[in-house]
Image (cartoon, rainbow, N blue to C red; front, side, top):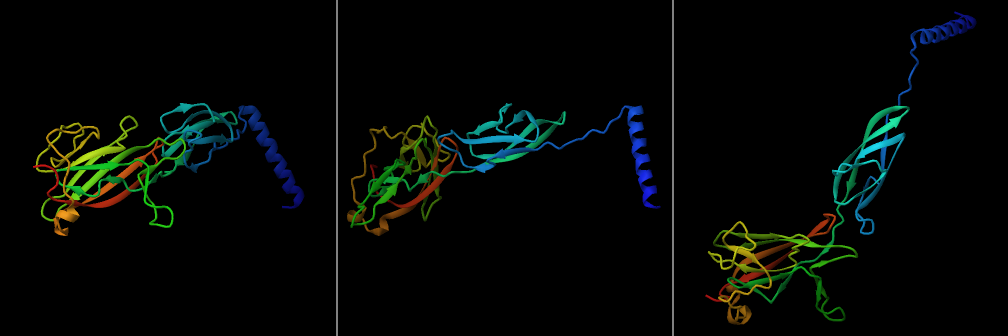
Length: 275
């Protein structure tokens, strides 16, 4: 086939296709896939924005967006108020056709600054109080002396903190004891007082735990039948008076769900408190 014949064939096919479209009423429709984009797609919540502020864009007209956090709207901007991974699904009008598109948004953990909890008093003893403080504190010398030590959670501007506690006490000759308490913005549990347990509960079940060997109690509650420890284990008892090891885990959360955990370990002594 020469060039002229090829050109004639192409023209005939084009004329045939046009005639077919006219007689059948069928015209070719251009279809485009909908695309949904998020900016930023990965990031951390902002105290200024009240979360992670995201702007959505597409190759068409956004009719609605299911933002993936339980909210559905038509705005091309949205603020995610909790850390996590979200799938945003949008109805988008492209070339006269409504299609569905999606994208994934990840709000990353922005951990608060959390140092080990401050343990009030110089030691912990069985059957006496252990006072745990999650508040921001600094002890020691910051100058030429010993370096200063930081304790508790140090909030940033605009950060609201609440706390979760876990204390694991391990004895060499009996089962370990695990006690815990979870806070909320209404009950932050920044300062707690805990009785290192005996085989029975000595205080009301205001903050129960799933073991008979320990109980969280409010810091302002002082039972009349228990007195504070009056002995100094370093003076009155040798090192063999150490009866257990307590691991204190302090976890601080902020309003976005960002969290961080600190751990410190203290010795527990015997013969403290009142019989």
